[in-house]
Length: 415
Image (cartoon, rainbow, N blue to C red; front, side, top):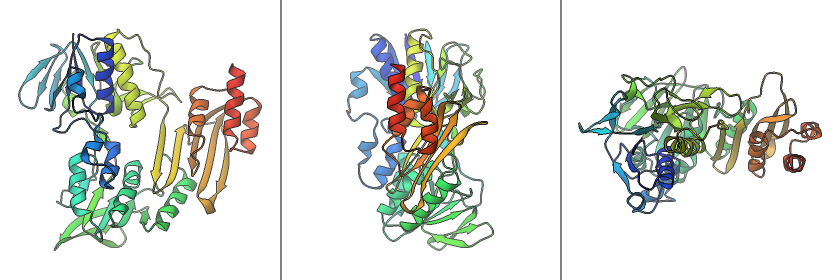
């Protein structure tokens, strides 16, 4: 049996390791599409902050890990998948045949269609090569403009400041991290960043970038023009599936999969940021571009490839945990609330502490927080376990900080 996994992020690597545990005799090929060993994008901020070397970003630090597991690494990119004859084409012209195929190609950074976005000193922050180029320009005393204050932008804020740059963030939304924070939390995070010396421009949009001598001129629509040595674009990502456009695999925002992570082709599966998978909270199907979901997808897809759809995926919880210069923010489940639901809020603006709980009937369905770190596991357990709160729903409405007590009470009730 030949298993081919396309994509060497957390999802693809987890899938390879799971297959090997289940099938000691299988032939496993991991197509990485890159020259570096499989690495974690989430480690790139630590690389930029010089906390780790490049090798510290690698998903597995033992150089012989893949050899030991008898996993064949192929650094070429896949250009086409032919499901009719169970084969795929590589960028070097080679063709490979498979019995079972997993597509875990992840996502790529996208940039706005503005003048100057392709200039030499304008970069995404998504790959190791991006990190190398940023490190060359982001030196002490340099001026950096960061386009985008979403999750990607916020995880590299601290690493840029540690390099001693003067940083300006331009966000077209009306608050920071709008996909995981409401107005209150986004406003508090903005104030926190400004207190650390970062200029934050919300409800602003870069209209063009041009070169003036050795510097860049960054024009802000309807506002000022900024001078910069480096512009970093962190304005979103899209699933890597263009090589599948002429295939018979069903595509939407991502690759469509069922509860076994199986596509419309029986022996082809998809996982991670490229898979339009099931959301635990509302049972909808969409891309959930977070690493815990990617790992979960990779494990479940691998089991089903080996054991003929024996492991059903019940959906992943949408969760984000973000450290922005020491201020921890989180969002879990339906953090924005649900129709007919109720919410409870605990706010301490002076100390940058905020907690909002979302309820549907007697169940906790979502949480967002800033500056609260002690109950992260509890929150996940209450939502994932669909714990019926009973009297604790009203107690949490009055005092959202009593999450641990509610969790213990629900655990005892279930027991």
